[in-house]
Length: 494
Image 1 (cartoon, rainbow, N blue to C red):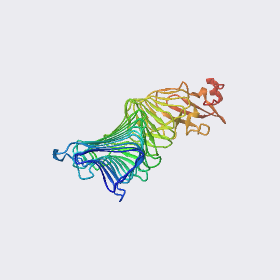
Image 2: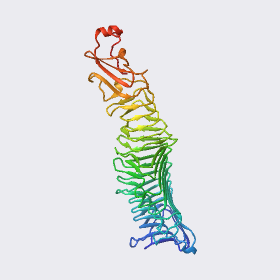
Image 3: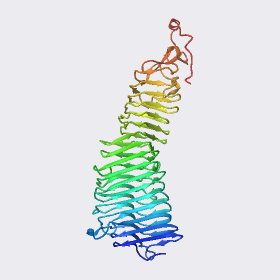
């Protein structure tokens, strides 16, 4: 079935429902290609249901456009679009909650997608409310199927206090900027509030160069992004960023990654009104960006009870922000994670893979370097440091200062990265600075257990800081006097 021009589903306080079912297909504007579909116009209640093996085609889809109370003469109603199966092709824009036909003072558009495929060639807006909109809530829930958007995806455009827009992706997939770099926007203009939740295995997939922007054009509302068991997937090496404060110093911006949720981007940046929370979620690097996390000023980055994981994913990014809270921090993945800020979180720090490079300061956190992982840096640790058997200390980046106790489950010269004891010049080398070391499981500790380097040279670790001493062979008189001649021997570090 087709129409030659526009399609209206509910108009001027009327109620209407349109169903595209079975194997049916529908094209709006088949004659001239100008075929918008308007659902719930001017105080009406309109419902569009698509559950078909066929196709719905239109040049634009506007749900609850110009939904005005007309000074109280019309009811507060709205429009609803439900997609369960089939293919929907919209060549232009889609607006869920719309001011398409003049600025309405009320907007209440709803979309529910449980299956099928929707292709949008233009913008996809939830809560395109218009500057005169004073109330109404618009939402889109994607729990199945695939939504493909070629242009911007925008939540909350130009609404006043009392207006809100939300999107929930809780099982389906939303692909943004399928052909070019665009934006995902939370809050643009005015005080409208906006929120996005990616949960229950749902995914938001961003093309190369596509960024997520909070609060552009001076938006002063509440902007919230929650990744709860879902995933935001940026393109590796594609320049995908999250800017929590793009064009505003007002309102609030909050990101929470929790319950196994994953955010894979180049960087998350923000300022004084920005809060980044980890509560059992993972931030996965997609490049070696110098601002993987950079929340400046009075903004905060918090490790909540569930803790947080940073997966360097083979890259070498830097976290500039200091980390707060009581949760744990886990460093995963190959590559090097640099912590350059001053942190005061009190949970544990686990280095499970790759290298943790500390150039800033960590507070009272107990750091464990697991087998196969490495720690390095020129910064400071206020808490404890433990080396599991098979862990490494990279000494090329400077000397770490450790105020807390340092222990070793097993350690030797083979566990030093960047120091070749066989070619080292004679002298004393400091690898860790501190005063509370337990050398129980350190091989070649003390002159009596010195490692024979050959050529009349020996090396051993000594007490105090973690220091190595490389010396020529001691004189026979000295060796005889201290009874060590038989003890000087070559020992393997493992």
